[in-house]
Image 1: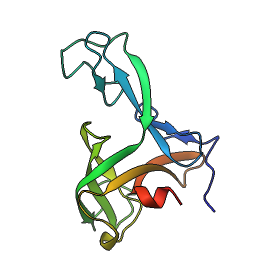
Image 2: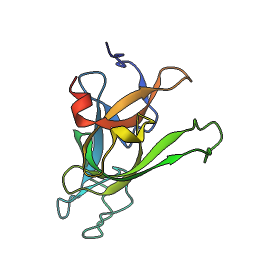
Image 3: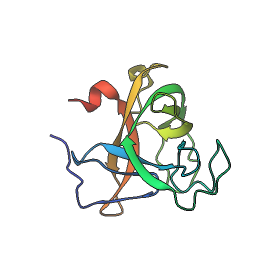
Image 4: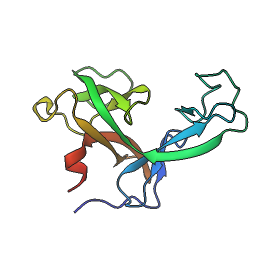
Length: 143
């Protein structure tokens, strides 16, 4: 049984929001009003395609998915309070989106392989009714 996080707030609301299932995440993009390019994050200061300032950009949500490009296990905290070990990854969002850094839900590298499909899921934080983003293999998210 999975934890339903409806009612929790995203740690980074300009990046993601809880999907309708209460567990997976949708990413928040901005559609450039000048050229139609989707920018991530949604609060980008301008369009990377045409340079438009995107003041009137429409917010678009897309299912939080991606492809694992590379990963590394961190054994030393990079920030105060960071739990270790933790797997950090470079992930291409969507099929042809930007490459972003993400955190895997697992700490077992044997469950991961470069090129595998990933899905973003909500991860409750100990600070209360707030969730963060973690990535799991897409097949695992379907269970």
